[in-house]
Image (cartoon, rainbow, N blue to C red):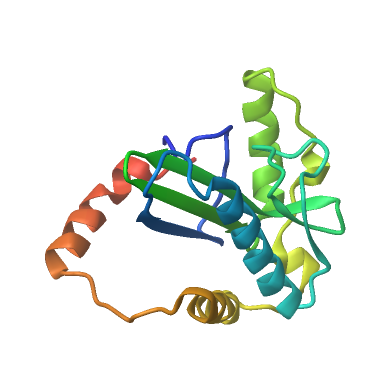
Length: 177
């Protein structure tokens, strides 16, 4: 599957949380660095609310390396961030690994070996490993509260036609063993 924001190979399971945020962009690359910094801080705060010693910065040997990854203790990547710019708009994507680091490590090792790119499987972490007992629902609630506090959210229900079309595309975007 090709990720809209681009970057190097990323893997995640159903025990991950992907948040995409899109907005208008008045000029080419306007706000790029500010978005990276702001979202990394937001995700760091979300992790800290769950007792994780979160930091912003690349982890040596991480998959899809980036200066705005959010990690635990400078050792394991927990949230990856990426952006995509198109004329008139931006997409910011964050992938939080809630669990399944043990599934992702060997997969990413194989992928990065095939791509002949540097990778250290010790850099793959999960929020469950750093904050045992945190539920996906509680984590999602914290993320929603952080986004609402920063941006103000307006609840909405997508049209049924859109939901039906999205469900029909799931099989095209799922990798199974």
